[in-house]
Amino acid sequence: DTGVSQDPRHKITKRGQNVTFRCDPISEHNRLYWYRQTLGQGPEFLTYFQNEAQLEKSRLLSDRFSAERPKGSFSTLEIQRTEQGDSAMYLCASSLPSTEVTDTQYFGPGTRLTVL
Amino acid sequence: AQKITQTQPGMFVQEKEAVTLDCTYDTSDPSYGLFWYKQPSSGEMIFLIYQGSYDQQNATEGRYSLNFQKARKSANLVISASQLGDSAMYFCAMRESFSSGSARQLTFGSGTQLTVLP
Image (tube, rainbow over all chains, first blue to last red; front, side, top):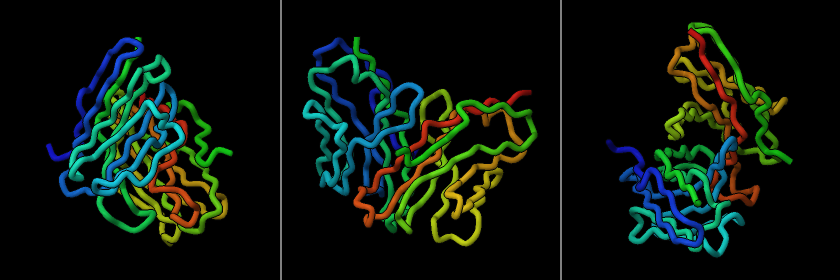
């Protein structure tokens, strides 16, 4: 399978714990995005990487959240001191270089986080 | 103001019939792209179809077509010959150009849950 992969698929944690999610983009894609989706809503943008550079962060990305993409390949999203409000589906997407608006993002299966 | 509006929380369609899912958008940017994604209960977002703001013709991809009415700022998804496997959540999304000051992210609507009846 050459699509976007995410690990783990499900994560249950207790409030206050740290969690880390991994995303492996499609191999030739240099752009990588993280989104968060809560129940009944569309995904909301969190952050964007071009190669290893984190070029954009949403205001949703509080200082408890950090994302990295070492060497421009896989990416990790860490949430420190989790809160119940962090419970959501975390989606990763990747895309090829393209013009400004035709950039088609391909999504992974997501990591569903439940904070107890 | 909402950038993407999907006014139909839920829709039902009979198998083999066509269905239209509504999407309206709001932007002042002359250059933008509109996307539709399907999200089955498994959670993965599946790309269906793309329409650019400067495209002269409506986009089509197999059984999917996009009814793009630029002046009305609408980009409705038409699914022809519905199948049981089409039952899913459908999201409309927009990407504006850098001139609007946004990054490369997609802005999504709240989705429409489509149920195909046998």
